[in-house]
Amino acid sequence: MRQKIKIAASILAANPMRFESEIKKVERAGIDLIHIDVMDGHFVPNITMGPFIIKGIKKITKVPLDIHLMITHPERYIKAFADVSGKGDFITFHIEATKQPKKVISLIKKAGLKAGISLNPNTKTKSIEKLLSTLDLVLIMSVYPGFDGQKFMPEVLPKISRLRSLAPDGLEIAIDGGITPENIPQAIKHGANIIAAASAIYKTEDPYKAVKTLKEIAKQAVKKTSCMN
Ligand code: DX5
Ligand code: ZN
Image (cartoon, rainbow, N blue to C red; front, top):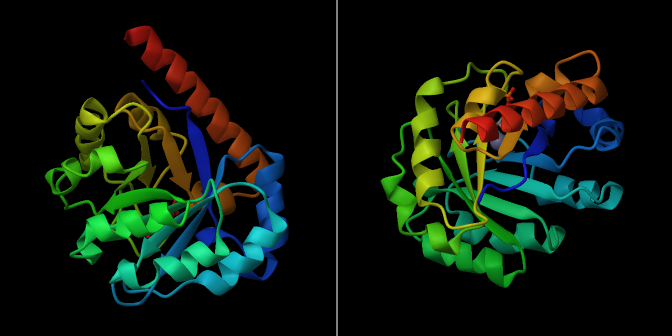
């Protein structure tokens, strides 16, 4: 069974001096998740935000968080992130970043949060297939992680179809990187139900309007996909 379609707004492309108003704009438009890109300058060649910022964000919004950890040794930091987040929030780590994925999943779940694993574009689904029953979410990267504003890689889409065919009921499958109004229908057709976007929301003149448009496109794409099934 397919999960509800959700749009996640990545604040990586928002104005960091105005996170509160930037988040309110998408909240008013009915955003489903706030996607937070945590980068350590080691797993990826960029450094962004950590628990300190997330603690502040939790105070200003009730929208669930989708915390995307692009950090080496996530097992060392789950507690720090769990301490500043809450029930209903996702913590997603990269399979390439740890030798102990089972331990990381259990740390996230024991903290009462939802557990996700992300795959870089060149990582095969086989690396996580055995873990699927223990996960709440799989995040397929459609760019190499590190920066917003990169070009979508359609070659990752078959990985989504494969995972959807294996997924237990209720598994959320997210796509992240280079999302535009044009490629959302393909992602949904392949079985993604969470669409994460930074530039397509925050690098537009009106993020409120952008979210409304992405939601409408997603809704239409679901209708079309269900007609074909
Ligand atoms: C990339 C991040 C993405 C990024 C997406 O490393 O994980 O979440 O913010 O940005 P856009 O939508 O601009 O490609
Ligand atoms: Zn991300």
